[in-house]
Length: 296
Ligand SMILES: [Fe+2]
Ligand SMILES: [Fe+2]
Image (cartoon, rainbow, N blue to C red; front, side):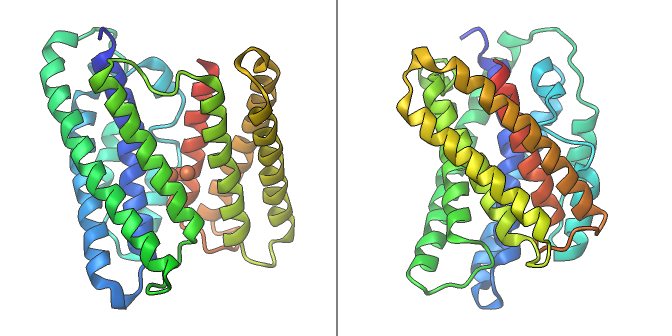
């Protein structure tokens, strides 16, 4: 359990922000008729922000260098795209958290004993909140699939964010029950994250303006490349994974460049799309997170 505090803090700093942004994307995509869903999504956003703020405040004493340097917590664009997204949607976004995250530093002192209790309580609250949020996402998906609800999010996007929330929950449960990190199995890791990366490309392709031909083709190319890697991973066993690791890294480095350019283009209004600026930054951070996992 030696890394319990550090591993928990690293996990929360990435995933709590991801969850609060899922709530924002859901909130922005509901229709007027579904005002109760809008309110629910907004309250999940607030709850995840509250937890994230608590983690950020103790983050300085436990965050790892790798996580800080990976830009999976914040990127140079996060603050700007939050302001833009708030202005575009009218959804309030707590940017104070982002400012504090930008100031996070590794101070090298381990506070394992002192922080163990607070972290245990925090993990418990996060799991409870996730149970509710996963249920909420599943309810929305069911409404959409049974054609009782229209939302501007694709059903696949809803399935995608359900899987991400379940992974977060699984990782927390692994820390709480076994004291270890989740997804130690490489094949499982590639299958999960390559699918996530592939689906990002599918969403980007589908949310770009139909006249953005070149970008649509590039996004489509990434979707196909990740689909091929998924196919390859399914056939491999753990001993023949090294080649796949290199290919996955190379593709994901290129993909990060594409997502960075996309975030810049969307936030400077040069790309025509229905992609919220914060969504562009969100998928960039997920690629950064995956690249860090690939380096482990
Ligand atoms: Fe996400
Ligand atoms: Fe994602």
